[in-house]
Image (cartoon, rainbow, N blue to C red; front, side):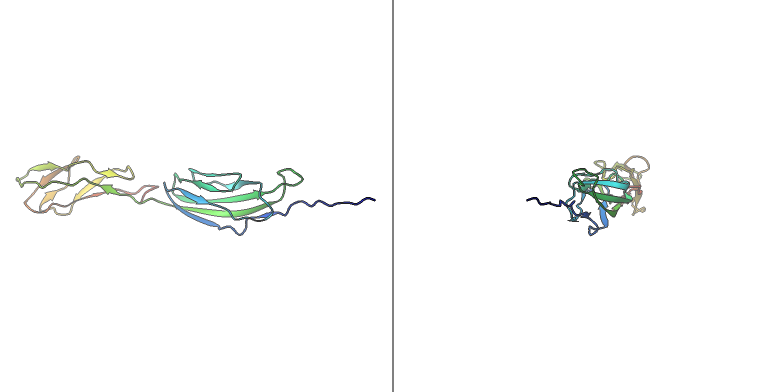
Length: 178
């Protein structure tokens, strides 16, 4: 007696239900995991577009992760593939994903400043150079010009009169920082 057995190819993978948007911030780690239904996925690839610099695809798990090196919008097509007759030439499913990478927020930190004694047309140095998260140049302005003038070079402040002296430090934005 003889009989026949039909062996079917696996169902096609389906990643169409995965989220189509991933938001992130410059310099902050992000992770995107596709959701798959249907047939088992054997490999993932980016079939069009480019991931943000600093972000990579794990071709086995489909996880896209890393720390974005540039702010901006990046659109990629993620493709999932299964085996067909034992080869990775099987059925595919694709999903367009938009990565919105925001600029990072800048911060400037100062060390505590000690009290100064009034001396007409005297100057003093801001103690401890400020540190900036972005590495951008720092500019200064006086919010109390009747009491003190902003540093004209470096961190030297010119005293105008006795009283509170308020100096503002600021930075311009860049491609990656607000």
